[in-house]
Amino acid sequence: MIADEKLDRLIARHRELEVAMAAPEGLSRDEFVRLSKEYSELAPVVEGINAYRKTRREIADLETILADPESDEEMRALAGEEIEALKARLPDVEHRLQVALLPRDEADDKNAILEVRAGTGGDEAALFAADLFRMYQRYADLNGWRFEIINASESDLGGFKEAVASITGAGAYARLKFESGVHRVQRVPETESSGRIHTSAATVAVLPEAEEVDVAIDDKDLRIDVFRASGPGGQSVNTTDSAVRITHLPTGIVVQQQDEKSQHKNKAKAMKVLRARLYERERAEREAARAASRRHQVGSGDRSERVRTYNFPQGRVTDHRINLTLYKLEKVLEGEALGEIVEALIADDRANRLAEFESGG
Image (cartoon, rainbow, N blue to C red):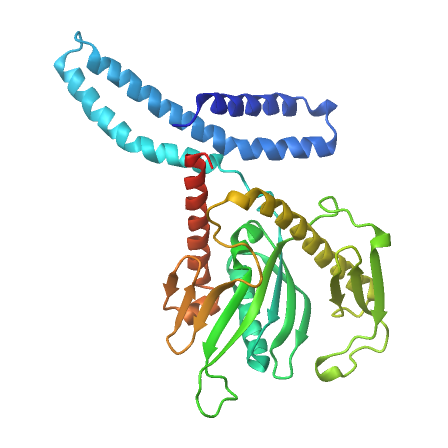
């Protein structure tokens, strides 16, 4: 049972916001945007509260009819049928309200920064990193998101030692955030003449793209080095010092960007990635403090955590956090079936947060 006092407070807050936004003259633009966001987030909650209370009210009214000895038999029979249907529906109505009441991740509305790096396995790891990067690019296309490559460092065989992209679109971070971690591949490399299966890995990090207002960066905390860009194998691809390396001195985070011919553009892209990494670092620290007593997390976002295995000989993909196996490896790598894994991870996270919510955790 959800406490009525809490529901009353949420409805009262929704009305306050409605009144404030009806007379916006006294509000600054930033205040109006903030209140509008809060109002839109509360709307589905209030809708859920109204549906929940309406169902309970109808059940109470029908119980009154059933308890009234003056009610005629036909009316009591109809009330009995209707009350059974409403009681059967009530758990679903209550569940929907509980889902609406779950605390939202403040970053869910943000765009995403995707980072894929080759791990153990040499050239094969770099080729697998490129496969993963293309998988996310196709998944982004299927969702109507804009996928912009920020930086890519190719290996000699055409794989990626490291690749970074910005993914822009509704739900980008919310749907991709559980992809962070170690992705492992088991397959026979093209360079392997004996047909032995090799295991290699790539790490994926999905960060919420941060705005300047989300994280303050002091210029004196930055060391910016410029140098000449180079391509695979070390050959020069630029005759000017356009590549940029930014070091954030307090944290030691280093971001390097060389894809653009303009030093200014490279610096802007590097700052975008740096902001995302600093924002995610702050969020991770806050989350660690909050989650000290948490019983379950679908994924900590730790890049050292093995999250998924792609087994080519068996044509299967297994997500180890939720014990989900799909025999659709090609469709997953094409981005088509990745959504099935994403949906399962989101559902598992929601189910565990609901369990905590119901137990008061």
